[in-house]
Image 1 (cartoon, rainbow, N blue to C red):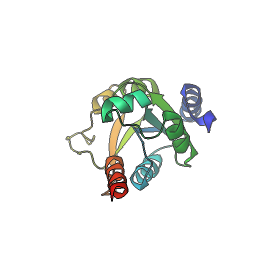
Image 2 (image 1 turned 90 degrees about the vertical axis):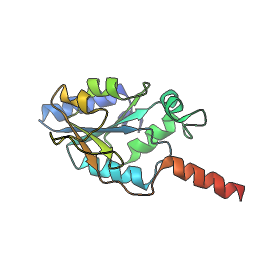
Image 3 (image 1 turned 60 degrees about the vertical axis):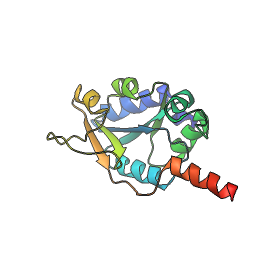
Image 4 (image 1 turned 135 degrees about the vertical axis):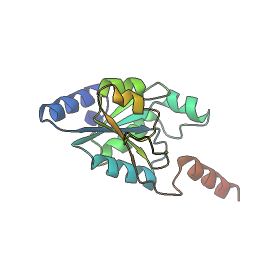
Length: 165
């Protein structure tokens, strides 16, 4: 799976897909404990283009966003799990709190997030923090259906509550 993780893997994939006139789709997140909600989002995202690149928050980024007890799994393990999924073509790990720099380098045609984000805006783009970045090169944001009740934080809380019983 290592050949599907990192800058070189993403650069090779981007060159191939763009040379063929294909559509590059990207999504991102912490993916701390991979669950059915993540898989549903990834599968839906992959259907929107010719490849799917996952922009993965690094360990430091996850800790900054979620607190000192996160991530539960290392970025190496998280990236390996994602790269093993047939719907994921490559994984790019980023250190910043947001994927803006990664997106500016990848320049996907479509940025996808799960349906727990609000939609709207008269231009057809989802209202996502990344939408303005995508507009710089004519990319679009899309929100795909969300499986209710699937949350990494809730999964962790439920697991810890079961241990206490």
